[in-house]
Amino acid sequence: MKPAYKQNDFAQIMKGRRSIRKYDETVKISKEEMKSILEDATTAPSSVNMQPWRFVVVESDEAKAKLQPLVRSNQLQLETSAAMIVIFGDMDSIEMAEKIYGTAVERGWMPAEVKERQIGWITPLYKDMPKQKKTEIVLIDGGLVAMQLMLTARAYGYDTNPIGGFDRDHIAAALELDPERYYPVMIISIGKAAEEGFQSARLPVEDIATWK
Image (cartoon, rainbow, N blue to C red; front, side, top):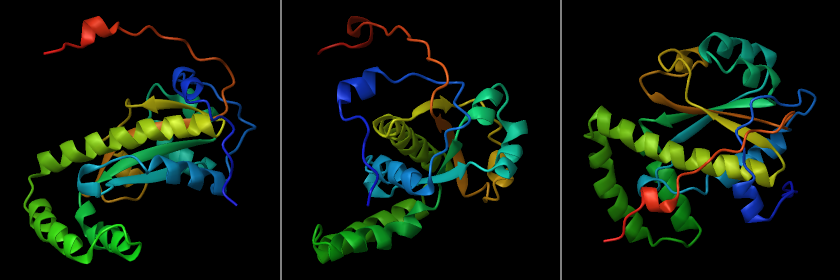
């Protein structure tokens, strides 16, 4: 049975989120619950639904030791969190198009002719796409899933911290991934907070939005 949410108040989930640096080291997250968190997080939207996000859940002492020289000033999160979720963008995500659209057809969510038409124009588009453009796509899509992951974690009773300060040049190889294919987007530390995170000020809407 799928683990249950511990919090269903969206306002509390969203407005109560804090970036946590120190976690309760005794609290672990089971594989079953982590799978549920990731499953819910991946309902996030992505460009042409290619879902380029790939996750490496770093929870063992051995795997954390590989991250230790790469996470710079985020050692406390590494040492105390239940896990560090490293989000990568798959630069060859088009390889999953048949599975994604084929599943939609099987479930009656998409006509077969639409699937064929979609794959017909998406495949050459992605195959010929410059690396810089692919990078932009995986960064946008990775940001969407990362935010959804953090909110989902709150619903399950856990806390998080988004981390962008790490050695991007070496993290893929350290986790035994192809650096040419998997672009590092972000690390999310996750666990149970051992101390309250700081509340932070937000700019008023008048400073950041215009109406035309």
